[in-house]
Every structure is written in C-alpha cells, then in structure tokens.
Image 1 (tube, one colour):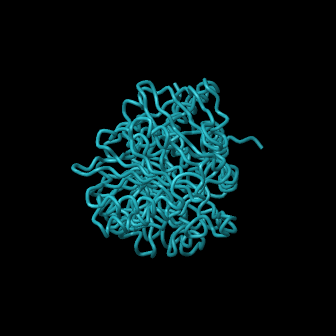
Image 2 (cartoon, rainbow over the protein chains, first blue to last red; image 1 turned 135 degrees about the horizontal axis):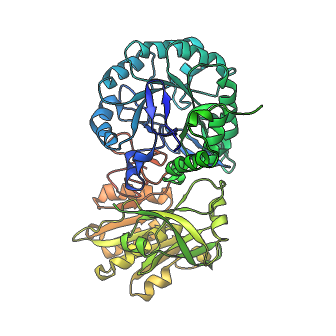
Image 3 (cartoon, each protein chain N blue to C red; image 1 turned 90 degrees about the vertical axis):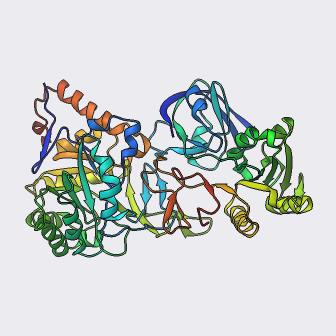
Length: 300
Length: 257
C-alpha cells in the first residue's frame, strides 16, 4: 500500500496534486471526478469585485500561453455567496486565493473567509497583470513580509504564499514570507512576457505584457524549487508548466511536497486526475511506501 | 448544456477551395447534442506545440457525425490540414450557446468571409421560414456555401470586394440595399458572423431600427468552458462576458464591440 497523502502545515491532502488558481472551476465536475484531486486553489478574489483587463487577454506562444486576465473576480462577498457553496460540494480541499491592491485589503478579505469552511488560503503576491499590488508586493521583501504577517495575525488557517519569479533573488522573498508566518510557499506564478503583431506593429495583448505559463516555463519553475529547497524550512508547492505525472514527479524529487497543475487543465480537463494516477503508479513500481520518501530525493 | 470530451475518428479532411478545408468526424454523440451556432474545441495534435485547443464552429451535422469547415490561418490550422482519414483527434464539445429562433421574424443571415461556417447549419434549420442569406468575401475563390444553400432552395445574395462575383462591395452594403428595396427591415431578425467592422455596423443598425439581432463572436480561447476568462468581450452591463460560455452567440444588446 502506497501512501501519497501529504501535509502542508495543518492541511492534509489526500495526494500531492492541486489545481492552480485561475485554471479550475466547479465547471470541471461535469467531466471528471474532482474528488480525486488533492485540492483546488480557487481563482484569486479581492475585497471588491474586479472587472479585469480588456481583450485580447490571452495569446498562445510556443509550448506556452500569455495571459493578462487582470484578476477578474466577483469579490469576496460574491465568492462566499455564489462560488463557495458549489466548491464545497466537490469533496476535496478548497483553498481560497486572495489578492489585493493595498496591504490592508488582504487581512480584510481573510477575515471574511475565516469561518467560511475553506481549508486554507493562498496569498497571491505575484500577479503580473494589475497596476496596483499583485506582483509588486512579491518583489519587495518588506512588503511581502507585511502582507503575510498582516494575514497571519487574523487567521489560523494554513497559509501559502505564492511567489513571483520576476525578481533578482527569490530566496530573499521566500525567507521574508516564511519569517512572516506562512505555512508553505508555492513557486512560481507566471513569468512576465509579451508578443507583437508584426502586421500592425502593436503588442498582441491589451496590456502590452502578460504572464507566461505552460510547459515552456517548466524548467524555470523546477530550478526555483531546486534553489529554494535548501533555503526554506516550510513545504514547497511546485507550480509552472506541469502537464504530466513525469513533470509532477520531477518537481517532487527536486523538493516539492505538492504540486499545482495550471494551464494544462485548459487543454485536458482530466489531466490533473491522470497525474494523480501516474504518481500512484510510479510509487508502486518504485516501491515507494510514503511519498515523503521522494520529496527532495534528488541525487547530486 | 451537455458536452463530451473524447477522441473521435476523422472520416475525411479535404481541401474544398484554395486554403479552405472541410473535415468530417465520426461522432454521433456530438451530432446528437449539438445546436446550430455551437462550437467544438479541438486539440489538433498531441504535441505541446500548438499547445491550446482551437475552437471551430460546427459547420454541419449528420446522424453519425459532424463537419467543420476551416480556413488555413496559422499554426493550428496548418497542423489540422495534415490530419488523415482514420486518425483520431481529441474533441471537446459541443460548447457554447447557439442561435435562438425569434418568433414572428424572418431570419436574415449575414456572413462575412469565413463567418458563414457558423451560420450554415442555422440557415438549413430555418429553411421553412424562407430565410435570406447574405454572404460576402474578398473574391470569388473565398466565397463559401452559396451554391450549397441555393441547392436546397434558400435565397442567397453574394458580394465580393473585387466584384468577381455578385455585388461589388462589402456584404453589409448589399444587405442594406436589398432590405431597403424590399422594405422588410422591420420584419427581420438578423443572425450575423463576420469581421469586427461588419459586426459593428450590424450593432448600430440593429439599435437604430430596433432589430432583434444575434451575433456570433470570435476570440482567442483557452479552456472553452468559462474558467480561464481569456475570451472576454465587453458587456453592456459593465464588465465582460465570456465568448466561450456566455456566447459565442450573443444578443446584440448584451455586448459592446
């Protein structure tokens, strides 16, 4: 019998496969058995509803996609009323993702979520597509610290800080958020990129730049997990371009306690479940009794 | 709305005009579920590049399957045209909302360029209501479906920008001329799919003349299910609607182009 359950702080997941924020909704329950997932990180919510950015919002690039959705969301009250009741029926762990345009906004949103029955909170300090807050908070260690610590003060729920790769030295940010009291870090959010239409010589995306995701960024994400594994004491959740069980296992072996599947869900709604099955199969074949044996087992 | 994700066998994939291909899937599940105006989201190869699925209007359905008719425009369609009969492809669909019949109004179908592929099945389905179909293209070799619709007794008007066949000019001008001549503008409902400029003109005309129009919109798409929020279009109520889930067919008073 192989045990592939994992612990992220107090949060126990039946397996290490989560789906990344903004890439999954209860809509998928019509096509797959969502209860087989380790957890769902919901689309980021803010204190007030946000309209998001004008189109075009997405554009495909080789083995990847750029997006500038701009945190379109119904706001925390809309989430509690309209979205959360549907998520709760899915029999998997539900992690809310929160974002804000000011530091104060984060604890305000968390206070509303505290007794809603969610299982954890991912703190988005890494969205590259908003003018205020977002990635800016995750690029400065002092601001990153104050966001996480302000949230830590108002909740006992497991906290995951989602970090941006668009920094000089991610370990400085990672250490700051761990010191501020987060229970885990997820790395990485999207990488800032752009594309140009050569016919009219304009940027393809409405906001000029967007966040690059998909298999194109997997080697980069993997390297961030590698470089942080020895630097931080909290569990690392690997995210960035995971599309197969092999990808997920690469992250786990490199040091990720759990993974998140993102863009790949758009292409194949069943992919995350297939990754769970693939990890199980690998563990059985390699006689791995507990998945923890694999975490950080990279031979150097 | 019901849809399925499955690999379906390709029956045929042939060039019907220069740069235009018609691909037929053996897919009774989808043909049973689909309504005119809906689309399918196709993974054109198992490779990571192109990465995302591509949306295609369901062109026509039969008992055992359905067809798409596509123009070669980029990476996705370049790969799709190499698919051989007997291959199977991962298809997700039918998706989105189709055209809705407007009671007491004569359907006026306006298609610009490849837009006719979204409207063809609808035109056939309302054949008994004597629809008027307007199809415009740049030139004769890009003009699609006019003969097929005429052969089943539908009245078709065509335009080409170079005048190689039909009215010389754009399809919206042809439409205006015909409708004014017949003084039927207040008796019709417009069903339109085409380039942004044409669609904008349909919007302003519909508002001015109070015509209940429906527009099928095109967008880059991610998931096709309303999750990624990538295919946004401005809503008249503020904010955005999703082309894949709230559309692709919208009532003219729902969106701002």
